[in-house]
Length: 273
Ligand code: SAM
Image: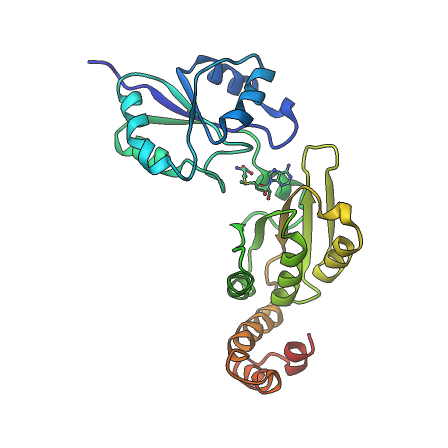
């Protein structure tokens, strides 16, 4: 009986090509085929390293349908690799359905670790990182985004978000609205690339900087927000959440008065802030 092959989950660079480890290159060179999110994009990366393996397109739209077929190939003895456009597969990227299907079929799934934007960003942010909450991308719709943020405002762990150039300005406004002007945050942009920038300050300061300089809205971002530190932060966060709900039904001044009574947060901070 043929023994099954291995599914290698391989991290690729998030900008600087030299971050593809020598083990990653060796594994990619040795597999029967590479499952990639965007085969044209990955072909460029692979040809830079002289790696020529067949590519299989695996993305959010076909992963469910393709997973069993790929598992069939693994069970038949082929070794395959999974990569995404950048960084670690499955982290805000496709792959979890395939990995789950492979594991359920008893196929060995083995990581080749490497770049991940969230971890790279945390490593230079200077924010508490012994515990953190990775939140991925915020919802695109403003109402859903605000709702999500209002639920996170009392979270004591450092929060890590992914954001694109299209929405960074809007998201900073909403982060400020949900967490207050004074919450400490760090914006990591274009990590490992030519225009790498890491800005830190209060949410109000960061928003002002990004608003003032169009260059600070270009590229790819990791936004990290310090967790709600003490009782006062948590109380204000809860006040903002209740206030946001009540303003759906009541005039803002009444909503602020009630939210302050319910949560103990300052009415001025809710209504004025
Ligand atoms: N799987 C990837 C990882 O391991 O980080 C993330 C893929 S996700 C589709 C792309 C998002 O990751 C970008 O919108 C941005 O938020 C973040 N990102 C990727 N590369 C980055 C970089 N060089 N600098 C800052 N953020 C980056």
